[in-house]
Image 1 (cartoon, helix red, strand yellow):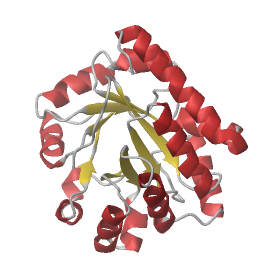
Image 2: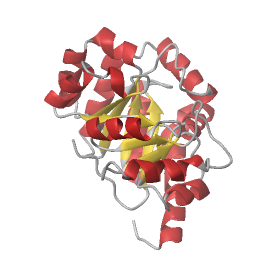
Image 3: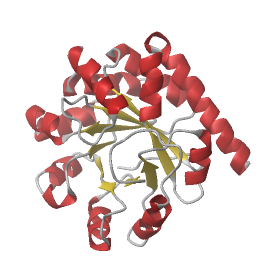
Length: 261
């Protein structure tokens, strides 16, 4: 269930699988890993992605038009795993996993080399049937923690999480922002009262400057919308463009923290 991060802050990259094609997702993931990304979130496209902003909504629409489903996401994971031992997280809404079947999914995910799962619309209070299925197969369960979460809820999240905890930097949907919310640092401090797991901050992180800003108080950053916007603008060159983006991010990290990759 361990999710490994390298230099601080670690980098988690989100990709909507199947946009523009499963092969491109695979190649883009491998390019990002080759450039230094620690963990790849493999997004399952969904017809009603209520937690996502317009960029990821559009990527989901394109992927669904291509017929991408949970099985395709797992096949992509399996192909990535042939070449890399980087962390692989399936990022999904609950409905696609229920339709696939939680028992079958957990087994197939392990067979594909997946390390963990994040279900964005599954509250910890309603995860009673989900958790034992994932844990029985050794899959890390990653939950979202928000600035509005009470300390009691953060404690519950910490008790059932493994791998890492995903701290939402602000309320609302995903999407690049000019500044990281001031709530993010306070949320990370509150989470640390209940767990020693790594804490990754996402929702709105998109630039090298924001990565280094978040790195001062968190273990990792999650970048999604900025990546999928690059894919949207450069579908034929997505692996190269995203790889360059990751190298730029981590060059700034190295310059700020004085560490070699």
